[in-house]
Length: 141
Image 1 (spheres, rainbow, N blue to C red):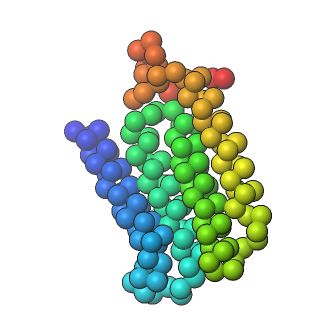
Image 2: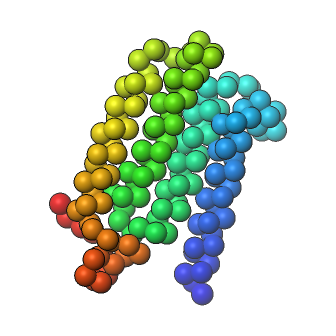
């Protein structure tokens, strides 16, 4: 019963993060009006993808118990879409530096490579069990 409560709380919390994040990203003016915030489109775009990244990390934690995997999945998502925001907003809004998007993108490539290496290191380590069926979430390497 306790596990069901925890999982339900994670899913509901992640859903609220995802919904507000998507709203900030696709309708920053509507979100700003609702929240009574000043309209700063780029800030709301970035805040939206960070909210979505948190939601993804929360949901990923239900699947993989490996904290390094969970953190890298959330970071790769949020940072990659942060880079996309800088590319689009720099062109559309004239904000940010011309190098922001590709420097952020390079960090995403690095983190993606680390995620691939980590997943290979832990094998089929899903739901707290390694590929040999042993319980545990801390894989060294």
